[in-house]
Amino acid sequence: MRIGDLARRAGTTMRTIRYYEERGLIEPVRRTRGGFRLYKEEELRKLHLIRSLQTLDMPLSQVKAFFDERRRGRTAKEVAPALQAVLRRQLQEMERRMVQYRAMQESARETIEILDACKRCPQQPSSEVCGECPALAGRAAIPPHMEAVIESRRRGRSVRSVEAEAMSSTSMRRDTGAGSR
Image 1 (tube, one colour):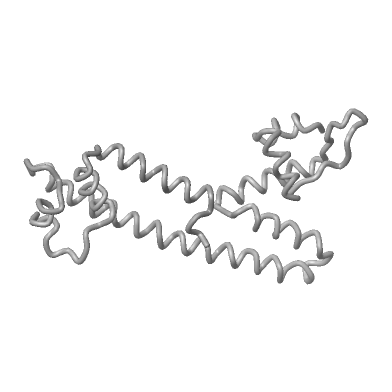
Image 2: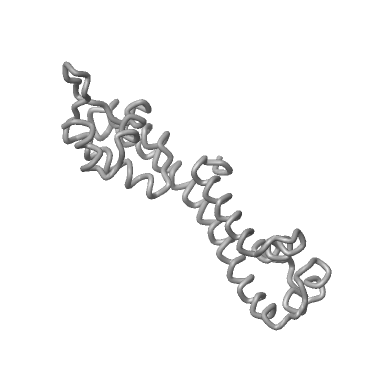
């Protein structure tokens, strides 16, 4: 099948397929005289697997390592140890991220509770005002989400702009892999 057909059936773009080809994840079986790439059905299965693994946050470098190890070995005995190593690394990364997500989740929960008290407060959030707040008194630390609320008001920014900035920053770190190594 041609690259356009492969892209359509895989639910992706031709550009993505070319990128995966450059990275050594998939390869055309041959090219036509006109230079069109032709792919086997196996490449479609690989594309579906790549997308599934990426949904689980497996970096393309690990997906490639997984495919490379599979290509090297002929028997399960030869392949299994290397594949286990790849999957163990992925599992460690997932566990690390889960710890971070749980901390963010707890911060959001605590901030929601604190903001219930803020609904009754007539003052502008600031370090001074919030430092005296009974909802924050006695806490070992101010949750990061609440710190962002307090800081945003001090700089004269709306809570929504801080929220959008935080989401963008989190998304960029995930997309670039920043902070994950």
